[in-house]
Image (tube, rainbow, N blue to C red):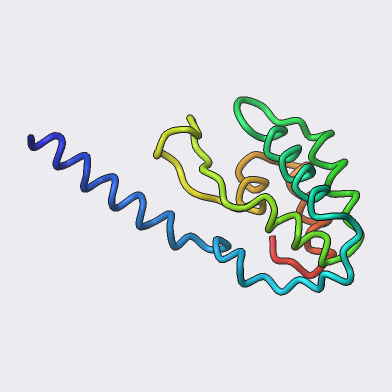
Length: 130
């Protein structure tokens, strides 16, 4: 019973820490929909493409940068971030271990070196913190 109780305490601490993670308030993003270059379903497909490129072992940088480079303005990038949502990132993403991250968090966790700098430059060019 002590092991189960201790496990529950750890679970609650982890859930509380990830619930308030920075960048998880996607509903508060100010997006001017008149500036959007794509349809809502296209942003959804691009966000899914990015998730699949990063999920699991390894990263498909070609797929990531094809989407990032297709963003034409700040509102496009913000809509992509919003459509990506907040997803569990960890060794095994289907478990509760890890943390809930938005697109920026996933990119920071999955990319390194020149790829990380390149992604950061693209996103910061739209005035979005990376």
